[in-house]
Amino acid sequence: MFRRLYAALAPTFRYWSQTEVHVYAFSVAANVLLAFFPFLIVMMSLSRVFFSQPTTLAAIDLALRDYFPDALGNFLQRNLPQRGRIEIVSLILLLFTANGIFQPLEVALNHVWGIRKNRNFFHNQLVSLGLILVCGALALVSLMFTALNYAWLKEVIGAAALLPLFFLKLAAVPLAALVLFLIYFYLPNGRPPLARVVAAAIGVGLLMEVLKYLTRLIWPWFFTKLTREYGVFKYSVTLILIGFLASMLVLAGAEWAARGHRMDNPR
Image 1 (cartoon, rainbow, N blue to C red):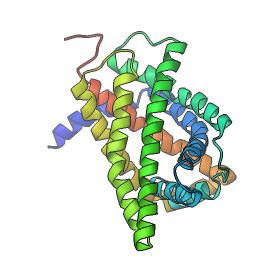
Image 2: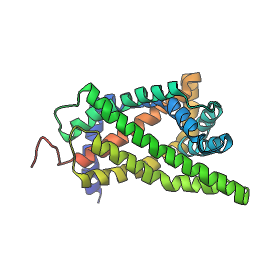
Image 3: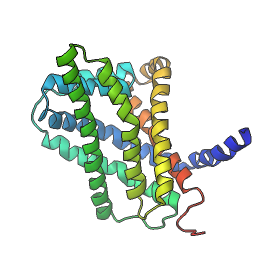
Image 4: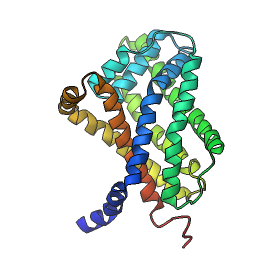
């Protein structure tokens, strides 16, 4: 059993030890930091079209507290903008910074699958834009679903904390798996095997949920260290580190999916 586990994990650890993999992951994490707040602003602006501001804020608060440790979730929730109009500047910043997420990801996925040629800059921007719109729409649907549950439960039973969180957790893994499938299948400059991509997306989606709970488990000790070392920058550093770990998981899933299926070696 241990030999099988070692045989399965050893190639992934060797892949993680490559210098360029860390470059890809840190590049993605830095752009996640740049895109995160514009993403929240755009999601809030669009959600307010369908729901009241208190319902929208409550739904986003639930999502933040579920995905991020308490102190970081509280900080993000306290600093959410209160404006009601759709922020055009935030939308432009989101598109620009999110494109920066997909550029290193495409290079990394092409390298994993053995695809020798990357897309040119403008082609990459078009593919990235399509993924941004689809993934943003999925996130908006998830947020609206949470807000709808919150509003309905508050009206019917007068308490809306536990059940909406349950629905949010129920949708988290399928939503993450769907987003990962879109990235794994459409972002490389080629078409990897569908079955391998689906399996990797589901597996990494589950591991993302595990990473979330591990982060919450070590957070009290870790946050003390970050406060001592980084002071006022501790929240930015936290977002970068979480983004880096998530990026490494995404790249590990791609490495597992492509194992023995490199496109520059048809056999």
